[in-house]
Image (cartoon, rainbow, N blue to C red):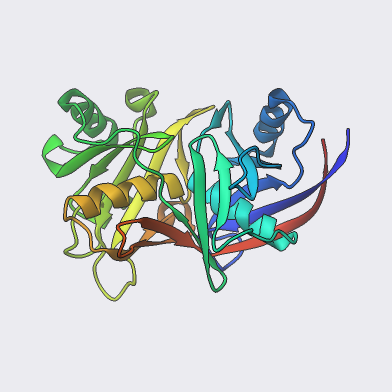
Length: 288
């Protein structure tokens, strides 16, 4: 075993322990896939990542992303947290953007002060969900089918199924049934005002939407505190359908006692950027 530099980074928050943590091993060279998977499972976090030298000349580093039980081609909060850790450890991008190589290809990241944002990868699958899936999700979420006012495939690596409810309050009240939703990655959004139905939020809050993410875990259904990949796919769907403005902030993690904030913006070229603050909570070495 070798001592390897390590950071645990809280993502989509500037306040430690209020976002979504990711374990980042800054030197993954020489580790087997099984070693990476075993370490990920041991951390008991939603994801762990391993930085490696790039294999493509345009990339600044290569990233392998694992969640309990499997490797992911892409995930949002691990992308932001790993880039944050790489920069903190002295990484310097070759060009205007940081370029990450991962399972979906090359992902650009830009810096806006202390905040990082990644360019949302193209959807692998979009368009409406099959009606049988929508009916199943409604039953699993415990809501009437008619309360799902929009739905779409949100597959950008993780195979999310996105549904839009009438309000943020309805999103926050959900108690999903793991036995019904078994095997599905489900993202739920609701407006906090009059912005659409991912779960909009009302009042003076800075956030336009409330988001929750459910996926199969080792003990039934797991809820992710704050999910970059899902928010990227939801943004592409909602903005493309005219259900969200070209720039907004989404809240996620409220039901878990977190305060995640996801900054979404579509630029003049049509590219969608998903940003958030990150803060390192643990820094040291890990034996692997």
